[in-house]
View 1 (tube, rainbow, N blue to C red):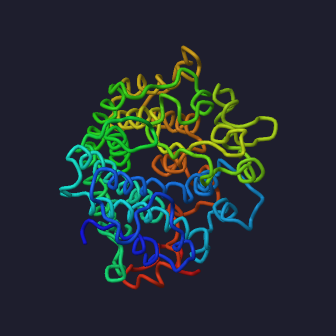
View 2: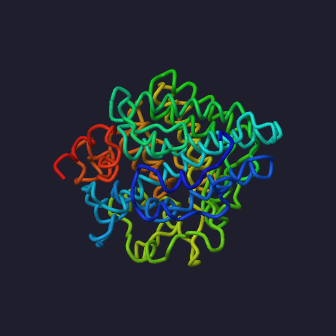
View 3: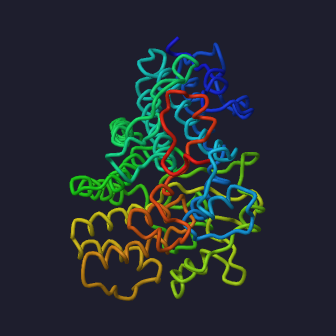
Length: 446
């Protein structure tokens, strides 16, 4: 039984929802009674994990974070974007439930592949290591997305983590209590370490690799905080920067013009023909760039490639083709920002400035204006500014940086409490998983 990929279990008895979406089987899945017996079937199992990236993130969820932080505005109050823009989200919202399910689809698929491939005599050791390295990364990725969205990721002492899943979900194990935030981080780091240990070579940016695992681990350590974690994050960032596998695009605009075929993106969701795409309706009709974001980007060379100054519509994460473009989960520029922020938090101010200027010089086509600061906090403020200018609209980077830097309440009047830093647990989860525990603080009155 260990080596069976039982996808009826994976998609039809998940306890997260009774939604009809669970009855839909993505392409390239191994179905019930099909075994992982050799390298080819193991590879098919791995592909099944990546198909889960097509469910939601490259459409609605990618834009929800900019609405939460206020860098985008909308007049559409009837959709999830309207709730995100007001920072008042109902646990009963159907789209919220889809957001919640999505990372667990990834996690469940990864668990199935890990169980099927581990110590499988029919799969070569080389393929075992590669497939397990990618699978452990994807399981960590799924848990990390879930924790940042639905758990108090900003407080290591909090009991409001998420449900951790390390085996394929079945009816028998569906009832499970949420873990603490510290336990969640420990689990995610262990999976990333396993991925790094397997040393999967970076071949392209739409498959997991040890390079991606190192990059995400640096990101996780920054979120966790503490001098020891900052020091390790800097070391990991240096390994990624000096790896030779990725490099900054010479021009900022080329990151988005070239799509996934650029030198900078470390991990992305690539869009293939016939797959779930970014729709022009979402990206070009509803959202407009907010006043506060315009003020941050004013006179910065990246402004013209981030949004259309004539109508305030998105540009950088939207291509003119109906099919849309890739969703970048992490690119090298963010690794530089992680390194700079960790250096600044360790009071290595000259080092942090030098790191930050790598991105600023790229933006200005050579030599950026000199930074003006007199202390650690002022430099941290400048680093936050750079998050906004470099990564606005991308994978929630500004939302999470604004929380980490204590800026979000200033930028967004609607955010008045740390309870709003995370989303509510969907009502469907609380009704089906009776062991889950209490609703997130601030959402008990819905």
